[in-house]
Length: 169
Image (tube, rainbow, N blue to C red; front, side):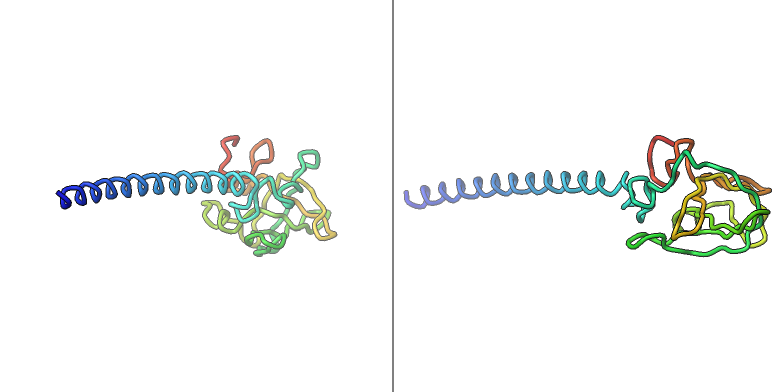
């Protein structure tokens, strides 16, 4: 008789352990999903998930629809640069126009390097973008770059970077 009672208690304990384990796994799964959603909301649209190149970052907020202009010139430099601490590297051009030689910021290197249209030294280009003051010098954050074989689109009509993953572009 004792064997049956002991055996019955063991079965109850085993069932209770299974139930507690299932609850623990469920709770861990819920916390993992919440953490993932919170991480995405913090890193996705504000730009951290884009290496700091999103609209919500200090750099991204420099793009101003009120200062949009178009320049034309020849590429005299193509370089990687890091606009601000904590950002991934980006690509900028030095463009010589009739009036000036100006830095043109294209976007994150990881995005620019994957595009079919490449910009090289001596290319004749037309750039539409927002004129800013960067490190005490004039610069343009490009929205699009036209050259003889196509157009490199970098921002939509609202200035949102095409690499941001936003459904608004």
